[in-house]
Image (cartoon, rainbow, N blue to C red; front, side, top):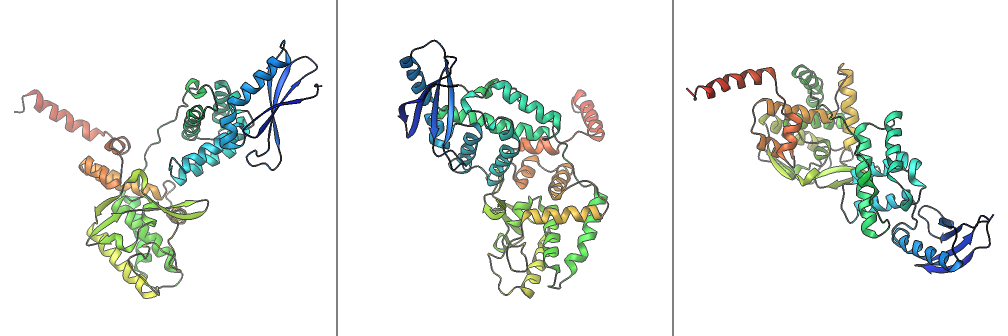
Length: 397
């Protein structure tokens, strides 16, 4: 039971009330009329304590309300789920984060973070609550270690932002241990599997009909482009005819899918680049354009290299699904379309390609990424180093 609440002030349109339980404990209550995702008013209660006069309690209540001003201003609510949603909106707007990244963050928030700590007021979240959430995620198998680490990155960035806004006093994430994640082993298709894949797409590329084969031929062409250039699926789907010229390929954009809708954007890590095409691939692209001219009503510089019967660009997800079905039908139980990129890169590194040039060709922001993913020591390398060491020990004789 409580005594009658009394309105004691207004903070940026939020009405603040003071009340007291029968036990003598005072509390503050804020009426939030525009809570994120809710049509009705929501009442946030905050305990103040015992043994004080009504004037002292009112002062503490208004001080608490002032600390919540920033949270109510950006999210219409100080609940953790609402504040995190506002932070993700900030990342996708002012911060310019990739649509795919913000989409992943929203999914993690909706499915995993909100059920655990979303209803707690952001100022009441403590490190042990977050640590317990990570432990439950790991023990239940609900998320892979890499995904739990992604949750940690989201929360760490969010709490720094909350503190900058003045929505919280402390960055609690500085006291939360970073989850461990196992480094994924970069897979690739060995030579015999590449041969099987190429043999499977050869008849598709040789079929010049313009019937139901349109999508399949574009899919097969995407496989050939990835094997020959190492482009990501989004970069391949973003190619236009004007990007292919005089044996060169210009990577200017990528096609992404935001909320199910295709959108053009800048390649990952702003890796706009120009590549020399292998002669076989250059010839295959010319044949591909000639085939498109036989059935498309109108073609030009802006015609997508990967397009459907209606001339629209093919989505990366469609390419990935088709390829996965293809390799499984060949009895290859591992790998996705992105594995083609790893196969291309692994081949270049194994062929002793210049690492700086390999990194540039792949669009890596740093050569360290190339080294970390594709440079692996082998017994043969060790033998060669042993012989070289012997020569060095002799003074190079």
